[in-house]
Amino acid sequence: MKIDRSELYSGRLLLLGLMVITILPFISIFMTALHPSNTVPGGLEWPADPQWGNFIEAFSVANMTALLGSSLYIVLAVVPVSLLISTMAGFAIGQLRIPGSRILLALFVFGLTLPFGGIIVPLYYLERALGIYNTRLAVVLPLIGLYMPFAVFWMRAHFVNMPTEISEAARVDGATLWDLFARIHLPLARAPMASLGILMSVWTWNQFLLALVLVEDPTERTMAGALGAFQGHYATNVPLLCAGTILILLPTLVVFVLFQRQIISALLQGSVKG
Image (cartoon, rainbow, N blue to C red; front, side, top):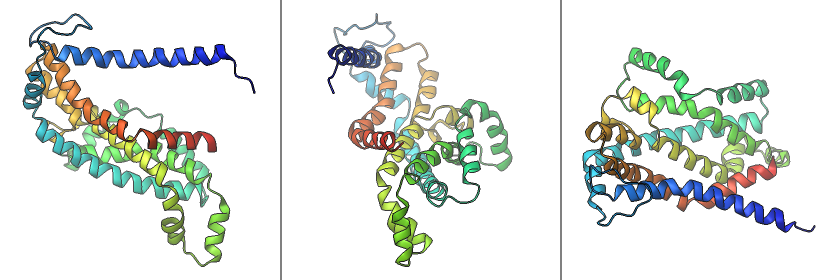
């Protein structure tokens, strides 16, 4: 099959343009963060005297040491539980084809349409009634529930494409239902589970709305909540705001750089299998 060079070059130019549009804001924020405090930089302008101390001041003002610990706690509480529940549910719906699996799948797909902002007010009153408002549980429990539609849909897409012959052969050898899940299918699902875990970790780390509304104590919020605390101190100090933004984005950027192969491979695997 002959490849049209015009389509090839136009595709590369499109990708190059999208890359520039994506990277330019980060470059602008980084350059702005290096300007002296209480100044208004003019776009993509490298400062004559870079103020690297802005990052140290932003880290101290936002109390990011406490926020780092709080974010790690919330991520470790949300991601493993979400992975376990979604993997078992995806296995039941996609591989076992339990009665009513199509209805369950439709309900999970419907859950994908629910925006975080649309349920924040009911969550607020519910958590005050349960007595978990202004605690980390106020963020952990809603996130586990809100991740379920996407997570179950993701894992179901893997299990539904697994050959049924694998399960049949295991049952012939006397494998129980738990053996079938834990010893046969779970090891085969490591790639989609790893990618899903990375995505949920990044989403949890960057969760801002739930942490801001449901937790009053800034030190009990996620890392993204540092922006709210920081704006209270330097609402008009653009360089320090940009420095704080860079510090908040840095962990997620590192995660994507380190695990980009796993994420891309899982996405490609899903596109090939349908």
